[in-house]
Image (cartoon, rainbow, N blue to C red; front, side, top):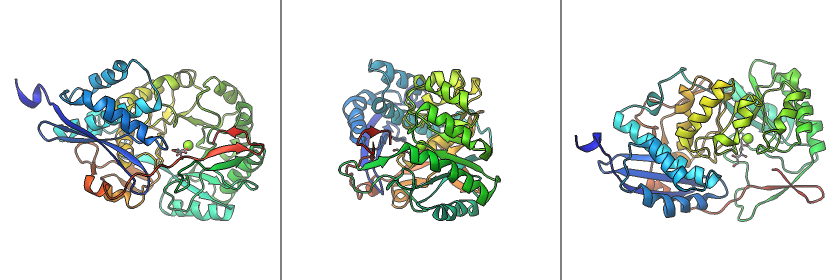
Length: 410
Ligand code: GCO
Ligand code: MG
């Protein structure tokens, strides 16, 4: 047999770096019969390293390969590099993987979720980001999400006494990083101030709005295990959906200590890029939610493996979905979320205009739930002409320092 059914050659693969509102790296793969697939390759603050990894070392290997062989291509790029894991390599592999799933869906005439086993639910529960410099501002922000029908809200507020705190923005926030950072901004961090304030913040929100919605909070890797255990214990009366990234996530055994001190659910994983980063966390049941993203953890193929492992141990999913991941990443996450048995929740920060001019998406938010839509493939069209209007400019995430100048986790 000849043609598409035995081979489907990749004839072109190119990388586009664009900044419609913020920086995104996109991989476009084309096949001999004109199929086009797209993948997100954005690694916030280190974008060009992934663009180079793809352009210089992956694109030459893709040309002439069979676009249908997703699993084989994944292993070829992962094992074939010899050097394992790492955010840059895994983001590059993820972009290829997404683009190939997109193509497979388009060839089949089916949305990717159908190829992954079909929907396990009607739509995907998402959480929105409420924040405020003051508790009054935060109240207005929470109210806005509840009015829009959100069933789950993450709350962050400025810590009194600190000038900048991660996670605060206007209601329609697109980013928490400074807009024009050709150099990283220095922020000051004080754990004692935060630990005094965080329980007041959560108590305040429950007092104002009650228990009729799911409440989340991101600690952003800034505590020690003992501090995190104490905080989790203080938050227990407020029935949190989760406490996110309480300690630096690379130290997996630290979570034993946190677990021994609190039953507040724990979510970890936005900085992970492979199953090995969370193997212990999952198999020892040290977390409740795994938050890796499609883009940084090796694409749909690899993130699905992580989710399947998590399913065995009663750990649910809660994928990273900040706006530094492109709409292609969010769409890919939604297709996967819709299918897996152990889905928990999906982070959702809407991409603001002009991102929608460059990425045309089919996902739809209704009553606090997202659905990826029914278009074949991932359901995202990337407009290369529009992308050209928004040139890349370097931007960095801030760096935290303690009051005495010591570098701390941001
Ligand atoms: C989240 C994350 C983000 C990260 C960002 C870094 O929970 O959404 O913590 O806000 O800070 O993705 O690039
Ligand atoms: Mg986070």
